[in-house]
Length: 459
Image (cartoon, rainbow, N blue to C red; front, side, top):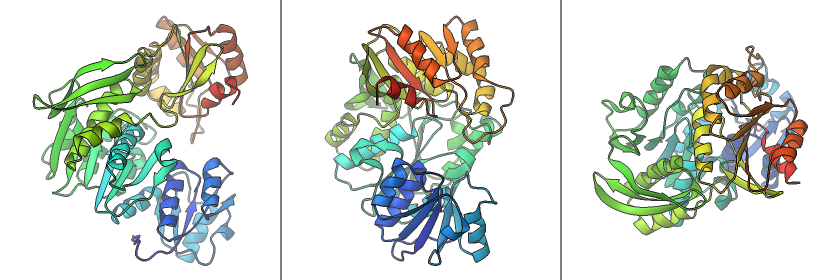
């Protein structure tokens, strides 16, 4: 495979440059002196930002977009073999690599690559760790799967020492990585259009852990079922943390302010190491923060820096993000699209000021909805009222005979009021007629459900 070398920049073309991860990688290469171009189906805020940085973006994918000076082509998982640019690169005999392979190659250019993995919480925890390193002046390079306000986007190019990035398990992407430190937050049944079952997912995480060198460190959440399957006989150092199970690091004295933001004490084998406060809600973020604190401890980052770094993090876009208020109703948007994430978000909402919690949920993919239908229904009953949009198909074509109406029926059986509407307009009209001042409205899902709240707010 072609090896990216920051000392020898070349011309790189990205097929699907407008994705959150691809755009970030393109920006890193551009700032390191590479010539960068790319293509995407349509213009977006991310592609416009790339163009402003001097990256040439083609709209629509054609063989002619592979210019004569291109030396390497990078593609997303969505690109198929009949893509005209992919076919042209093959015809020319150019080196071709996936997004994950490029990210792995980039890691080799840093002294300490830090990879944050897990079914949930990657973006938040990566952002927490980034805030701590930035607070301490460590000048990290950062690649995060969301918009982090403190860096003005999803990527920051820093020095050659630290590279902090998310590590996604889908399609085994993270098996192309070269981490020195890895953090595994959790492992749940998800992406079942690729993985066969939870054991298949665990095997993938085990292979990821095996990528760590002997002088590397794995930090893992001991609350994760069967986590020892990942850690057994690893040659690297293993550090555990948890809120429930016995672990090296635990949290004690957890309290919440009126917005559900936690304060807590970190304990190491029964001994207090420090006290921290968060500006993001929910017990799940205490767990995420524990992982971030331990990562900081690995590098002997001063206690006061860790406290300030965590305390300055107010969240990323689409993670319990306050959008505004309309008619006395607070509007929150959240990316949750798995039952575990939904339960975490709605449990966090319980500590947020409200009369009734309204959850507008847009299921994401037919495969996930069908495989986890009872779990989705149970998690959504944590809201007082549920409103369902149509399933967001994403990459899928086959409906598998499943629909949002099936999910509505399951929720109603469990005793929670639930409505389904096929259009956003109908959902917005229903909310305007039924939400009352003091209620909390959460738009939830990985698709375009965010538009409902923004439209209600007149954005």
